[in-house]
Length: 478
Image (cartoon, rainbow, N blue to C red; front, side, top):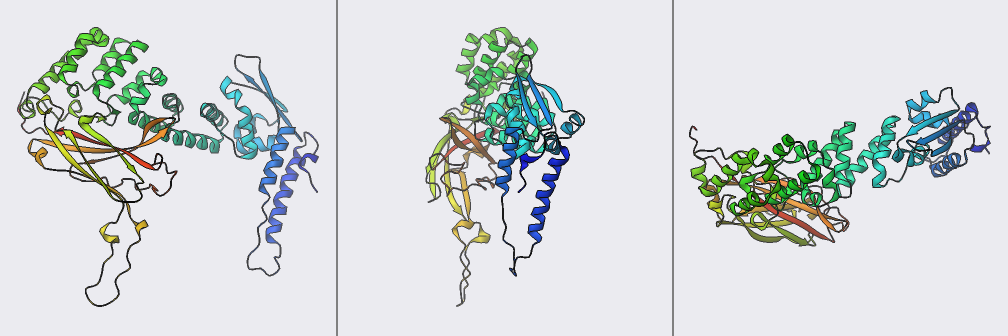
């Protein structure tokens, strides 16, 4: 019997011969006569081979290359007895680096040096276990040495953990920017937008760069209690980072002041340290906000274009803009609820309410799949199966008075997931007044599965948000 450790140390030819014989033996077994059976019976000892490769790395048998990995800025050196064939199979850089050398000194950042053993193990076995803090250093090593499969695997891991709320989104965003990973950057940005309240209350908020802040502030899909919460979060960021005046003023101008009630605007002007330093830069926006609240929307629209982003609510969680809805055992029955929202963000509409009716169906069937019965005597067409349906959420106003007032509505449904004791937003579905439902609502959800990523303790946690949008009914030259 051939043993993987029987080759002489430093013998490239011997090690290559072993792997070649393993391959030939496997192919020969596959071609062998199977005694008249229609199909062969597979014999799979791949796990045994992986175990022997792990042992080969652990014991250094037949090693022909020594890697000395030094952590930058320290005297710490880790020694790995490796095999140039296996390293070269995964990495062209290793293939060139180890071509005529039996010992190589590598210097890596401390975090990369700390996980270098996992990196090397992957090259031997094609698997490893990743922790959150190890994702970036492993991705760096995979990028540096050109191990594309590990690069993709770690990037997929990071995106998956962002969706579950476990990943450090701010740090991973900055890393994605530095490496040009656009898919990871967008995943981080989406998570931050949907969970800005949680992030702003955490230590991560202080690590936000001016560039990242500039990406977040213009977005209308930010999920917050209200615009005042965003202002306070920005003020805390300004106090901690002390950016140049131009950066601070640009950020303050991204706040949607018309979305803040006049009484709170007065308090900000009287007490805010940020406005005390940079008030002149936003004086025109504050004046416009007061005018917006003082006049009727119809009158205000004669002088200002209310279609701008300053007059569009974000995804506010405050009761004036929506309501939470927890549906227990959502795979069972149809459910319904109702809630009220403020007609519009203007102070003129502060006392006016719109009532919304909501229907949830776990297995709604489109018309094309519903059972159809013949009018004449004869067999009915087969009924559609319940599993052919899909979840459906319909949101309709109890009356149509909103349109007459020059208001239309954008609706958003947030789906929450619990992570480390926090309820975070995992999915968001948006649709306009012209549609009563989001066509892709929970399209890929398996509500029958108790460990579904869409469920928290077998319950569906939704938050229904209605964003009123004013139409410019009358346009006059300024």
